[in-house]
Length: 280
Image 1 (cartoon, rainbow, N blue to C red):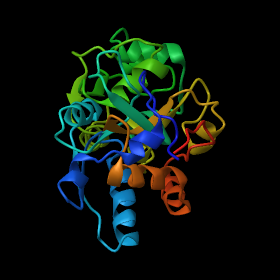
Image 2 (cartoon, helix red, strand yellow):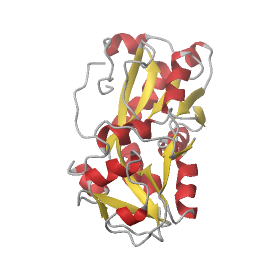
Image 3 (cartoon, rainbow, N blue to C red):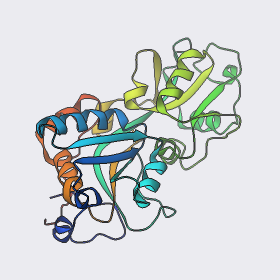
């Protein structure tokens, strides 16, 4: 049984399991996915393991582009599954089902040359909303240089998560913030610029080449995401057009229920806890 999709329209999964997906109808063994750059490292591992377990009878075509791109692609029938790092929004196309597959968290990050240990909620909001523009105004920093804010483009689900959880619904001011199309690009920008501050999902934020900053005295960590004392977290989703069916159903079900998938998720992310299910 798949965990209940996050959608206003939740059909009975038993009916969904009898439906034939686009790829199955074409007799294809390839599942196509596109979307979030934050979940891309996880999906690389999951798809490789699933293909191996199925003796390569199921293959995958995996592309990035951002959460909103994946959602648009699956809605338009361009891919079988959209990868999203945010939940459904009122502005998303209708008829989509969002299946939670893992939890992740977002950290504020700085360059190693500016190893700030902690920022308050107020400090984070003032910096990213462009109200504080110089490091000399930030307690904990020894710099006296302008702050270079790094952010993501509007299609990024991590941007949505960051703004909803660590900015209390506020918006990153851009400009002056520079924007990047992927997590990797923003990570590189922070690594190279001593004056930089940004935000990244855990896989990229906990890289030893950059500094992950505590938020309101709470470390940005797996442990604090598991116990939910750290507020900056959300879910990774697999998104389908209508209820998941055929090969897509089997793949998502495997992610949600198998020990093999859980082991992969535990390597850098947070596995799902028990949630409601629907009969299949």
